[in-house]
Length: 116
Image 1 (cartoon, rainbow, N blue to C red):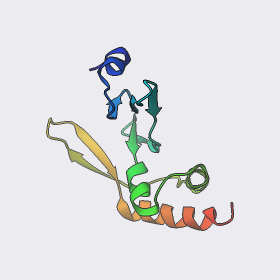
Image 2 (spheres, rainbow, N blue to C red; image 1 turned 30 degrees about the horizontal axis):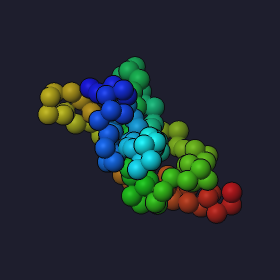
Image 3 (tube, rainbow, N blue to C red; image 1 turned 45 degrees about the vertical axis):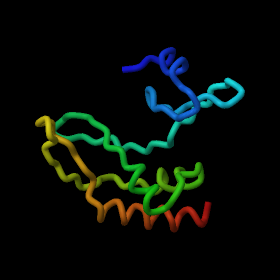
């Protein structure tokens, strides 16, 4: 794992991912940091709290998550979403939201977005 200091020394014009940020040096020597927008659902499965990232679904089907779009998604967030569990390659259990539930949420958010 690179530290931010290692990253700044090693960045030569290309973007690198470090601790949740993308960044790289400009020609002037200044460092540019970009934080991608993330949207995570807090889920509770058998009394265990976890997070499931859902931003990729909404970016793919709706485009960039602008502040207004994020607000529409937060206003229309459902109480419950069905999850599908699967076992990862290292034996860990992972959860994925039901795509039909995400599609319904997206539809409600798009309708609300027009009135914000």
